[in-house]
Structures are given as C-alpha cells and as structure tokens.
Image 1: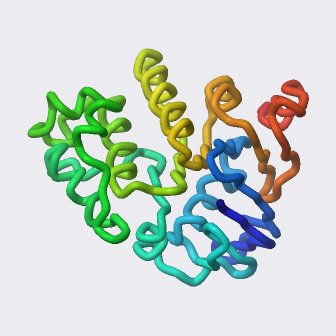
Image 2: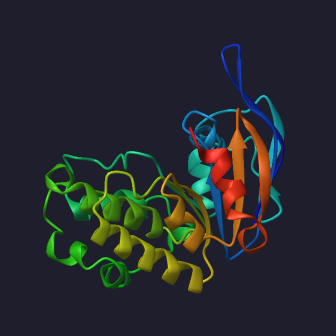
Length: 230
C-alpha cells in the first residue's frame, strides 16, 4: 500500500532522514518506533507531503506521490493525525468534521453515523468547541476528522500521548476495528506495549536510519526495547 525508497530529508545542514526504505503492507499496522528526536515525526510529515524530501520516492498504491502536495495525497487516500492533534479549537466538533469532509476523494465521505458508532462522544458533543474538549476527546475527534474522508492509509503520530488509560483502550478498540475494515495504519508510538499489541510489522529508527525491521512476531522484544532505552 505504501512504499518508500531511499528517502533523504534535511533541516538546514542536518541530515534528518538517511536513505529510508519502508514497505507498509495493505490492511496491516506498521509501527515506527525509536527514541525522541530520531526522525519518526519527520518521516510521517514527508509521507504526507508536509515536508519536501531531498531524494528518494514515496508511492501510494503503486502511484508515485513524491512531488504531490498534501491535499492531493489526501484525495488519493492518505489520512493524517499529527502529534498534538491540531484540531481547530474555535470550531465545533461538527465543523471540525466538516473540514475533514473537504479532503475526501470524489466527495465520498464516511457517514457521520458510522463515526459516532466508533466514537460515541461525537454524538453528544457535536456543538462543543474543539478547545473545550479534554485531551482524550480531542484525540478521538482528530482521528475521526482523518477517517471521514475514507483514507486507505492512516498515519498516526503518538495517538496515546497525554491520554488517560481508559481512552487509550477506546482508541485501541477503534484502530483494531479499522484494521478489520482493511485500512492500512502507520503508527508512531512511544507506548511500546500499545504499539506491539496493535501492529503486525515494525521499523525502529535511530539517527534518521532504520536499524531494525520485520514482523513483530519474529522479532526479539528485548532487542526492540534496547533500541528504545535512553
């Protein structure tokens, strides 16, 4: 579903991503793991087209999207939930979802009733402003906003950050339901147990390079944890 070849990216003179190769199989979850500052968020932003790349290619479903802007990638089926959620705090829940609908390819959107089944809080808080929601509610809204455009690939950047355990369980339940529906997920996550329970594949980054990759069932968890230890 998503294929990355030889991806290089720089911030000024700093080489932040170094010849990254990544294959994300359709209908599965791939976790991107690593310490803080190793390039995980940068990689997601490059995949979404928020950051330009110096070299390499990004393909979505066999189509080269390397030079396409973010809105065209969204219309081709990429959804993005950034770190920090970045909802529109002055807009209501319903209005935030309306922004997501504008990104839908061919105008085909997920019915709001289906979203409310995944996230019941959307039903009761339609007219609440985004800035008045709790952190967990904002995260659920951010995921729903990305889902409403029916993405084929969902990029998630630390969805459990700052979220209470009960809401983390709810988010995990929703992500498993999305995988059952055939949506492909790329997950950046610091909560290792959450990532390993959800993902089928993982790639570990260190200093902008992938240093470990494979099916989680075939990897030694202790080896993965060594790469994450501070």
